[in-house]
Length: 553
Image 1 (cartoon, rainbow, N blue to C red):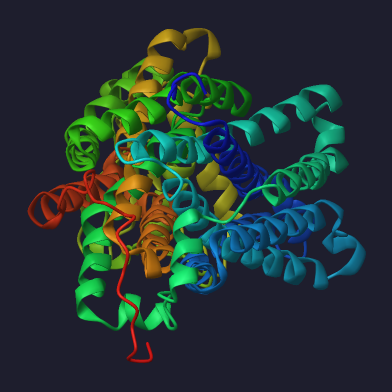
Image 2: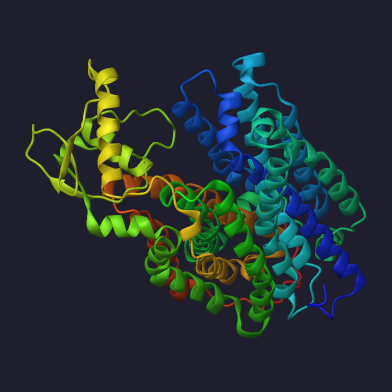
């Protein structure tokens, strides 16, 4: 805590306790996403492997989907009964749910009950996380002196990255120590079970904390809100601020955050075919190098303001994502870049016969020849362009001068046609020198880490000051409720569904960079709305006492 020389011993304890507990909560939440391929085999083995992985990802997405509802439930509770007790409840729910995942019998043991219980646990995790962040941010900010809220709350902002980093580190350590076979069989449970120890440490630390001084004063004066949900969202004056916070602040922050820390990992492993372990190490190093800047920009926001730093991050992301991700291809998989230039791939099909492969609920099946061809290329990380063909003609994939005819996956001869198509496509791509995997020896590691670090730096710009700004936008009586909802709508929905949305865009367009349009458009939207409607908050006095209300709300 040397970066905060003016903090008292009690304030340091508040920051450490709040931040450490939130790190553990994020650790618990991200374990599932990192282990989704193994979890799909353990709990969804009653269906084919592709459907199992889809269901596993949907269960992961369920945790994001319910985060706003957790914000409503626990935000209201935090404004009614206090910050400390509420985020004690959230951490217990998160820790216990994660531990149960680690000991939950698989589908092979208890059948359909296994995936049902797993989804319920994911919902509990999402609800708990929806209440945790607002409580920790509010609690720390209400202990911070004027002029230091950005510095104090920036430590909370490091927790999501550190939780992700910790989960990757524990998984990597278990995988290396046990070997892939034993890890996949039972060792994957260890990181989940370890969360019980982390839970015990977090609860012990947080029990020693006192309630927020602003909440105690408000309680003593009788100025607490009797209906924080109504005050937050049914009164236009506050609802307007909530909407500005969502569209002019958290939506852009969310897509920059998920692009810089999640989509990069997806892009490296799924598109550029960098092996899983190498990609995780590269991302982990960039996270380690970038994390201190959450505190740097949080402290800087106390001097120059929150708004210019956050909007600068959104603007830089919108302007530079395309060149940065193209550079990532150049340095991580140069063979793919070369093959694309030598032998470009084209899908010739009637556009009316092609679907937009966006399937967030896992119920749609994409079986037309056009969909089959596009899905096969996207799965191999091969860029392509679309060419309009006459209605009724066969769908072709052209790799340079080689032509491969696609097939109908729902047709009567699909079982026989599939291996023929797969073999022909693989042969054509191999002949054109499209790599099956990235050559580890050809990866320019320093340059890849530099690019990943720049992307993480954008994350620190938008995320470092945001907790302080959200706290300062709302009055004490409804602060927990009001700030939690726009934060979790932005991060749970705009950010949480980014990989699915980006994949659908890439599959439709064929351009491996086309998925970046989603975060670019949202970040640009936030920049414009924020620039016009968002007001600076760094000099707001959050200790100002509200007048006791007698209108029954």
